[in-house]
Image 1 (spheres, rainbow, N blue to C red):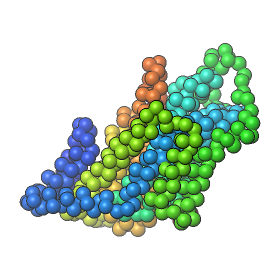
Image 2 (image 1 turned 90 degrees about the vertical axis):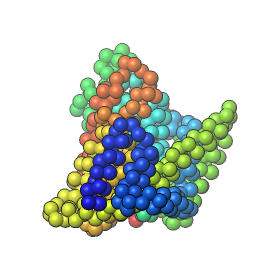
Image 3 (image 1 turned 180 degrees about the vertical axis):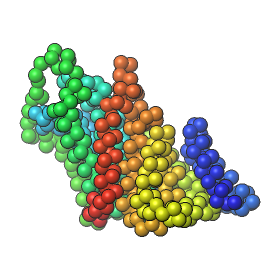
Image 4 (image 1 turned 60 degrees about the vertical axis):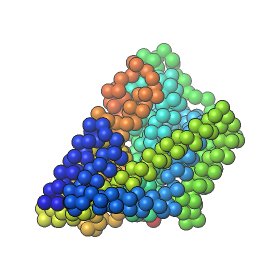
Length: 439
């Protein structure tokens, strides 16, 4: 009875989110009704809600969220992304598909200090798409490249999705960050190889032949070494500070967030990027984003307690074992569900719904939960590119503001990146050492 009710409530939650109900409201509502019906006591549901609200975010660890959000916004407003792209463009100017490769490279470096895919998509739409179009690239390919490479923002640490997963699965956020380094670099390298291969063997997919003919052969001028160092120094210092401190154990994740935010503030002040009320806007947006995430975590904790009370994770785990699927059979089904949900829900919603269900099952089947978390984040990130939701694609479209570039064209431009990510996901799932080697 309780199990059937729990499964019905999961279905109700997904329906509510698809209908447009805010994910936090849906989680709170479904969890409250679930506890009420299971225990037939609304006062117990209220007490459980109050316990969840306190225990879910009382830990010092949760300061990580606003600190990394603040750091990412300060870096974005300081034009560090533009400088990184200009350096990558100058260094890679002679490679086939060089501007596409430069976009991926700049996004990979930028990801190491922002941790938010949507921020990367917005920044590089403004910087990279006009430059790629001017040099004869198809506008759809340029926009698809920005959307595709923006997902590195959630794979290369620090990453807000890794923080959310670490909290929900009760895993070390520092270990999650370190485990994401090799997969993030691997996917970035695969993106680069794919762009070079397309530019070599399918140039009509990458280039607009007529625009290139009119423009003629043009190679970006070389950039003096001092200018390269000046443009790269701020972001490289931040990357070294955050990842170096985490990897050596000198910083906890919260301390790394604090040092990163302080370093980003120094860069923004040095570049005089905070005048005209921009500092207040950064602080206001930091608060808005952080409070939204923390409320989601409280709602997810309440929802997770309801699922445990209904016995859903245990029952699904027993079902998986009785059907003989085995660990990797379960993983295939789980990833397929994540990819499907990615077509209709945003990344945070998928994590909040699925992690409380899947983690106990994965642990019972013998998965390392850090490795399982990396697989989860990659699968969820694919959803940022898949139609009809594709949040990164819609972000690029909105930022681009070009009526001649349709959403469908950007989805088509991002398709090779989806295929590369799925291939990398299979590889990382098959070889856990790729995510666990540095831990």
